[in-house]
Amino acid sequence: MNTDQSVVRLSVSNPKSTRAILYFGGNAEDVSLSLPEYARMISGVAIYMVHYRGYGGSTGSPSEAGLRHDALAIYRHLKDKHSDILVMGRSLGTSLAIGVAAQFEPKGLLLITPFDSIQAIAQRVAPFLPIRLLLSDPYRSIDLVSDIQCPTLVLAASDDEIIPKENTLRLVKKFPPEIATLQVIPETDHNSISSSTLYWSSTCRFIENVFVTP
Image 1 (cartoon, helix red, strand yellow):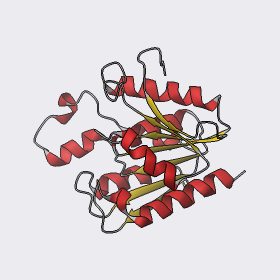
Image 2 (cartoon, rainbow, N blue to C red):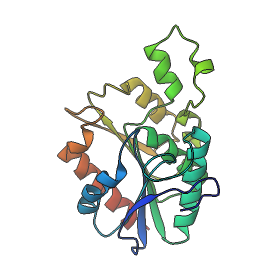
Image 3 (tube, one colour):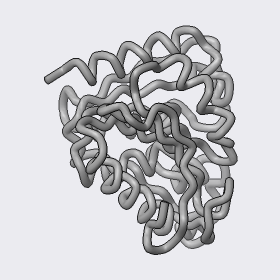
Image 4 (cartoon, helix red, strand yellow):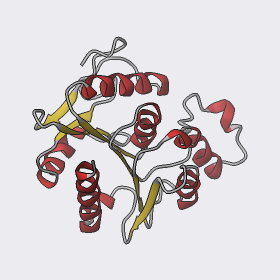
């Protein structure tokens, strides 16, 4: 798909469905490998998984501004094809999903291991460094969530070694009242969360509830 700045490749399942999921993956996630399992677990819905610019056959160089531009362009394109869209993000992709949900009003928002900002996480790891000056792409999701009005499910890993729980909680608290629900998936870490049966049951139940709500 041409976003005016780059040509972004999408891995797609069931594109003729009236309902769709737009998925933004984690850093270095090969979404073409993720798609078969999602398509098997979530039936009857179109699934679009984004290959970020510079990866997986997409053109251009990755940057926060560029990825956000692509994310909005893809959503605009899909909303002309599908009556209902749920936006989903994992790890780094949660910031892009949040940006889309803040500007548009999707049917729902599903966030897997989200964070408040890359800047805040880096500051916890290296508090003695001038992080604000060193990070060109801070991905400040926390600045965007106050504009979100759609039902939102946040799934966090109990033993996430990448994103501290404090950073996820800080993000959730910035949502408008009664918009976001936080669920912690026990005995999982940042990468293993999607191997949990509870992850899949919670994901599928939320998607089903979102799409059956008028």
